[in-house]
Length: 85
Length: 357
Image (cartoon, rainbow over all chains, first blue to last red; front, side, top):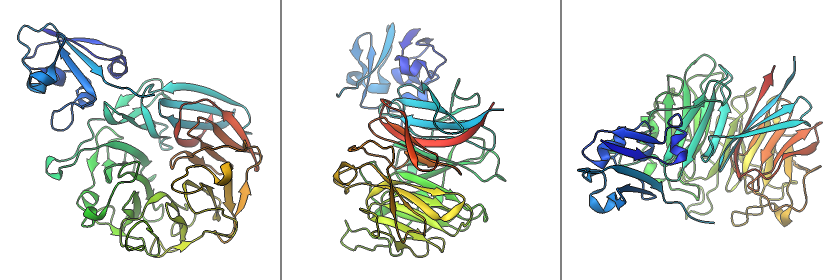
């Protein structure tokens, strides 16, 4: 079981829920189990370059992206990389 | 029973609902709804009162959101996608158009890159229009600064088989068979940024409107001027000059009671997105575009304001527009603009409908 934590703007699209406990072997599988999967993944199952997905504080993009394994992982944290101003 | 005007004002950071009295002088501002989303367009479906919003996010992508309870709760459409063979992905949802009265549950969605979708289940799912997706001229379309956006969808109320879409920069395409096939209708419409200034496709239409009382009459505000067609787009007449200070602008409005009236908000040029000498003004024609006059009573001057293509609206009694600097104006008493709201986020879209209670 891994807990996925999503940003508040996504929680507003998921009836206010910010944390989800899911059974999954990879990050992609975990994200597809969320009610906001369509906002996280495009038609090819990839996430936006403006999105960071951390597995226990490790950037999942450096470990295979959606294929990143979740063996022993406790938390997936999704962070939107927005800047400007 | 009180009646008034409801304006749905889409902004860079959510949707605002502005409730106006019947005289358009007293207003209440609520929002933001869909907080944090860029609402490129929102409208109330007159057939059943449902709110629809084309809501986009730089990270989370394009969505269509709908609300059956006046914006209190929203449901997201299923993923707006394209077949893998197309090699394309949907970049943004731009414009939602309800189907005709005799087509309950049918809606159309214009999207980037150069896409038209149709829903026959009140916005739950969307199917791409193959005639647009596979159009033989697609390789000659190219995006403007706002992308390859499909920003105008117009349905002929007298002929359910006839409809129009506009894409920047592909031009206007017309279907006479319910959307199965599409022909470019850009005769005499300039594209002076191309080597051939009058190509078959490649025109940059910023907004197109069909007159509901005279459906063969179309108006368009183009990158290269203001145009009118009286034959369903088969040919176009350019309407610059005679009181119009320039041909460049984004929105266009009409008077649903009078096919000869139209309203535009000229900008200095494609390089300078504000009115000539910083003058914010709507220009009106009452004779089919032969002459134009300024309507600026009540507008702040000078104002280096940009009004985007979806950021104006009209009804039988008035006109409305919003600026990138977050001001929303309504025309009261026929000739005086009232600044209804200011300091909103940058305004992307405006639609109006009547409310009663």
